[in-house]
Length: 416
Image 1 (cartoon, rainbow, N blue to C red):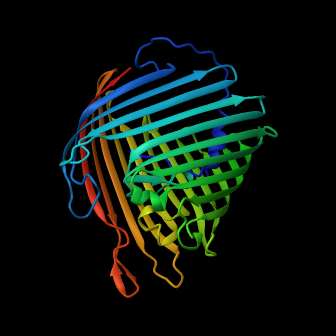
Image 2: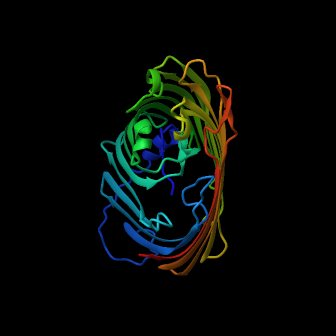
Image 3: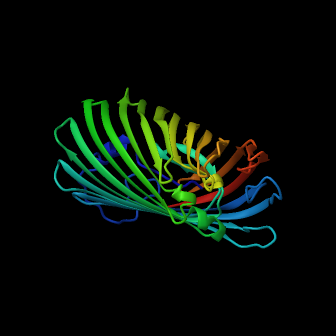
């Protein structure tokens, strides 16, 4: 379960929105499950999962087999100048606790709409709602994974609006605004971590040639906590200026680069600065076979484990993704992500500690299609969070709880 926590700093997102403007008329009809042009589909996955650390803790680990079910639905409605879409994912794991039972549920809903007012002017609106259970891998600027947090069940809602205007065949101006809310369902967590984020991006994109575009971008982000802590130290605002380059070398190989600088100011008077960088190299070496490498550097609000002590953290990310089709029926997927985080700007005056954490996640999956509508799925996921103890007021304390976790799942998927 991954949730997407985004500040939308990838300039090519604005560029891609301009590509979704083709005119088409669609109807809702029954068609073959493998038809790639159908406007809706749904799938149901049922199976079991072995988890050796349900609650992602170092001590008092709970392990065992849980049963899972997942339902997904996707629909698209294209009109002459309007395109709307919806995706819904509902998942269930049972039991939540080996002793107390209970059901763990997740909801993930995304609704989006794009409208072409004129050939030069396009508008976009999207909303994402997530009700899920942490810990999870959380993503940040440019969708680069930043950290793994532990906080219990949460509700997240993100609303994004954007306007794109083509000044000429080469110049495109875009403005995007986003508002997201975090609400945690455990009172002890919610009291210190419920917050809202507001962000604005202004971009000017220039197409050097059909395969290369360059962008000059500015992003402003404001974070407001329900309980901002001592001297309102958790409330921050940040300014980021960055240059973006998108290059399509050939139909198989593409490169995206973002580079700039971030200045983050806290209401308690402290300031944090950091390079803002993102790079993604993607190679499509065959039919449905892809290899991609992502490297990122970003400054963000401190993760939940230490948010009462620090207002910001700097994250360095390396992520590798591979997808290979062995046969028309058999596919394999693999993901490896490493994140190094250092926490800065202590909320308490006079404290100079600098805790760090390292997060490693890996995933291997197999998909075998018996029929176009029936397939088997096998997944293994390993998660490890390590954090050294920190000297605080003459004592060695563990500000971040380390843990490791193994999950193996097997299931069957019906698709229409």
